[in-house]
Image 1 (cartoon, rainbow, N blue to C red):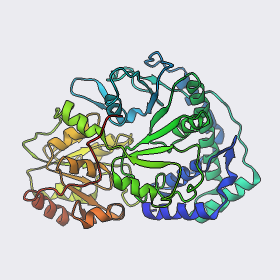
Image 2: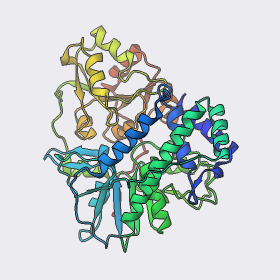
Image 3: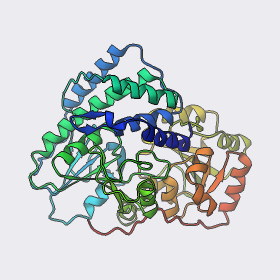
Image 4: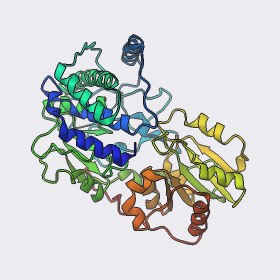
Length: 464
């Protein structure tokens, strides 16, 4: 289902069913169900129902125990912190001097006063060989075997939701119990840690809409600690975990952040569109300090593919409805045609797409390696922008970052047309349904034209 259609359906469901029926210890857990629907409806292919439920439960327990006994770098935790930072290893970027920098939370840490004590956690394993710029500890789920049972009313509502959205009723019930169980474990873990913090005022988190961060938010809310979600990508009007929340004008969800730090005014406007007078979960312009940090302290590092070539960066995304192929057919057609032999494509894999490297090698196996290179994404994205003349993506928010570096973007497919409609109309980005003729025309154009900058990201950020 298209992103825009999935968004509209979720908003419709939220206004139609009794979302107050889903609670755990007084917490309204509707955000968990909204996330399940969002991922299910926008998936490339429907999930196949697992018949062997016992095996899945055992696998879950095994993963929890494995994480509990994982030996990771652990720093002493101060009890006098005012701020806590909780992030994900996927945001770590390897800098030219070998250490890893978190592009979401580390630039904020850099803006703090020099004498402020900083504590940072990751909610999953950081490879032991990775040395980070800022010290960290790993937060683990508490081992809590919750045998959750849904009430008759909850099953009835989930069945109703399944019928409206045309997904399997038993599957959504299983997913809800599984995500609720994960939420509970993270809530218990966070509460245990936060109770030891005597002066904590704020927690900065990333990608709030997973059970781990929802558990952290719930524990913080219970203890009167503010939570702030730091923007990591586009938060457009059709992103259902940020936009379209119709029931929070006067109420709030403990599972959601208190505030959203956004790249710019447009992200704030999208969040507020459904409930402009809300008293909770309010956005503010925090900017994207990683860009200025990179320009000032990192700069150009090495990248496969010569800067003397006419490099075109292609930021790949996992298979998605309407974009089943990571590398679209019209780029393959260009490679097959032999036209514009001076063009060198750099295919950068998505950090969350574990199968992307193997896919690229297979899809490109017949082509001359002089015409392309594969960027595994462990170096900063901006290194690639520094040596690229253009950028192509289905609908990644990298297009906004490319604009900051004066690199023009070609968007393709129906999703991009919906999501970036305003920017396409104002010639910030070029769009194609996906034809080689359009690609050739765009390539000739960018050799002559300058890029129209976007106002989506603010980089001039003040100290925290």
